[in-house]
Amino acid sequence: MIKEEIEFSLADYFVPGDHILFGKWKNKRGIIVGMWEDADGYPVVEIEPQPKGRKDNVIMGLFKIRRDIREPRSR
Image 1: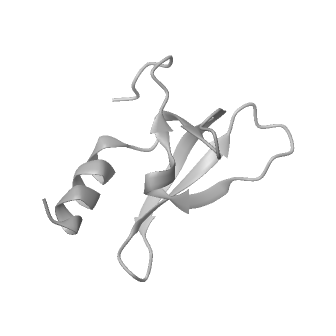
Image 2: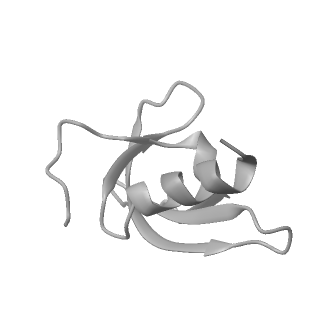
């Protein structure tokens, strides 16, 4: 597969509202709030940490997250 096909297939896998794991060791829980492409065309996601508390939303690349299989899908 070429790079564009891989990016679009992963971007279609996640939707806003999905529960995910993020962070260096993929041990922080969060919910996807929004998705878009940056100026270079790479997919970017905005994540709301759970539990929220005083934490700000995190914006990072799509390839640094993993779906949390312990939570139900939002679809």
